[in-house]
Image (cartoon, rainbow, N blue to C red):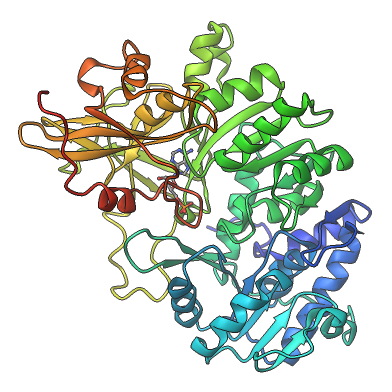
Length: 545
Ligand code: AMP
């Protein structure tokens, strides 16, 4: 017997429609990519323009399932594309401009993008890409006609604003199956070809609900959200969707991701909540300390995408009075999988014991189920000690990659293998100890490179640290600590190792320390350990050990 409830499909356009009706005058503020003053309008106006865009896309022949690419910052026009494209039933393909040129060419061709919308910043890049991407029919510069270059090698180049100006805002969002594809995001594989994760309207809506919950982002109509995480990185962790769902004011920082520009927006717009990767927050912390600044409205920050170093959490919490919530996820998980917030029974714990929980990647949000398994796929205990491969499943976890060479092979017994290695404690707090390919296997035991890195960056002279396994005749692998010193700071390898002593098991002590000027990173700011392993191939560890 079926329930007697309306079978209304969960569709993305409905989010903006909701905000336009019920939060009509709530603002979206955006720093335009082409410079100039902040752009300011309301959800009502954004909705009208998204409908004008949908009319324009329809006229250009865009149909359900077609891919429309974007190479763009977090701006109001990018927000309109999120809704105009998906609302029509087409797929909004957000492209990460920080990827290597060959990867960009691969992605645009693999996705078969029919149109490509881009910010002025990326004009030189797009001019180089175009000859390699013959399937793109039109290149659309996301600005007014006054910024169109006098001459350009781009075929079929036009500006965004005239396209919209020519259309009416009279458009009825079509209704269709909620499992229809809505957006596409390629993961920045460090070795293989990038892989496309194809989200659906249903997965996006369920993820938006789950991410809004009190123990997750906990946002409402009194919040002002500034996503520092780019809209080309897993849909800015879902913020462009959950902001209209909750009626939050949205502040989009455009290309201005330096600490001074961010601080100006935080203060000027009354931002209460923000989200981004640790590197951004370290930059902001230095800026705050150097200028003796204080936040007047910022209360909460989500840190994810890479492990949150304890020193960062402590500094924001204790010095700046901002709550950090440490989250874990991946492109394949939409991305939120876990987030660290305490349970009632933890509130009486000593501050250090609470800190120990908050620094973990945290508990699953509803919609995600997880387990850890050993090398034979057998479940491991949730004792906070045993660590193994982390597997997840749920309605907003990928079941396959877009256009996969071997479809249907992604899932093992209905579970997605994350490639992360983790512990889970009896209260369900998950802690990532490594990427499975980065964990250091020493004498049959595993050493967590992330734990060692987090400890090393707590040293006042260390700007950044990476730990890799180096082949060892007796132990098979031993850790090598690679460090970037802070400008005008001195520290020796011996001093660093002494700093680690007592904080780690003796056999975790790195066998050597090397200093470098900079560490290699992926396009999403993660340490590129494949490159480090190449750079240190053949490295001779000191005798002994
Ligand atoms: P991406 O799909 O590019 O977002 O990368 C996902 C990967 O980033 C995960 O599989 C983890 O290895 C890593 N990651 C994300 N968040 C965290 C976190 N809080 N701590 C440690 N690693 C993380």
